[in-house]
Image (cartoon, rainbow, N blue to C red; front, side):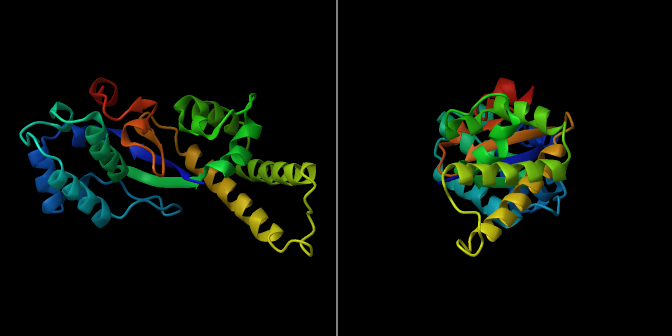
Amino acid sequence: MADVILNLVHHSNFQKLVSMTLQELFEKVEDSSLRNYRPELDSRFHRDFDVDLEGDIMEWSDKISDLVISETIYSQPIKESEIAELTILLAKWCSFSEWRCWDARLFLYVEPMLEYNIPNSNDFLKFSLWEDFMSSLSKTDKKSYSESVVLDWMSRREELGETMEPSEDPRILPTMSSHSTSSELLHIFLDSFDSKNISLLIGREYLEYESWSLNGSYLYDLEEIVK
């Protein structure tokens, strides 16, 4: 199972970074002034560390040939996947917070709030699905949502003939607690997605770079990203 990864991104800061020439961008990484463009972390969540992302950006610059450093990333004569790789790093740089979850578990957290079934885990990469989910989530509070997730999980176990007795399965209580905590954090996370200056970065572990998206737009597409 792979994690689906969501990041809340400060959109105007991201636009500033992708509008810089590569020379300016790399210089800001080297002198640490790129950190001036990093929004404050929401302490309830994790995100990639500064030094890790800075190292990844410089590693990208070393491995990609034919760069025109006097131009922006979107003006480079390189592959779409290579453009997307750097822009994902820049979007993560502008992230307030990250939430991730096994895609198999996401069915428990998302599907009961929708008026339709989710055919497969690839649908969790669609911005439209998260829009529908957020619309439904806005109608309930954090505690009620978390409780509904746990009750749905219990119901699914019972339908499969699985026990709900902790004495018979010591994993039940830790798993219940995990679902409760994860769903509450998901509610908090998406409740923050209420500003026109915040975008949702959607991806997955081991997913090809060009399949990541920001508010439904692929990250190699200049016109959609910087407008």
